Length: 174
Image (cartoon, rainbow, N blue to C red):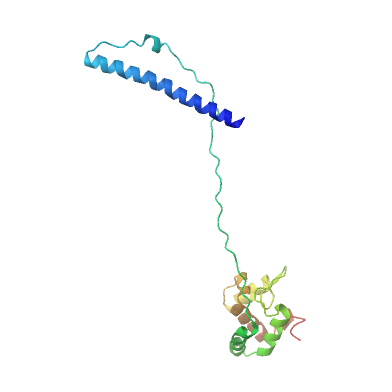
């Protein structure tokens, strides 16, 4: 049904353009003939024609959003041996026990930097408010997505341990 209406509308539009074009064609020929001094073409029958278009449905284009590519995040699991250098680096930098950092990371996330629960994320399962507050205090970028970055997570945990804030890991720091 919709296709028929659209086809009829298109026919009406072409007819309207066609009649107007025919009238303009003959008016132009009549004018050319007058200018050239030739016999004029009579438009008696055509000038009395009136075309009253009926209201037509105006088609408006519907914008269809184009899909945007959503990047696929591929979790990178870092094995404990790959983390050992980070534990050593930040344990030395903040003068804390490397084995305590490892114990907490193992207990909290099983050494998975992409671990996430409803409130906590990363190797050390930092909550967003604690992460933001601690990173700001450290003078580091407080972006909560950095909790999934193994190096930033170990750095922040080492800082927390150096400040005596083991209470954020009540079950894993004993």
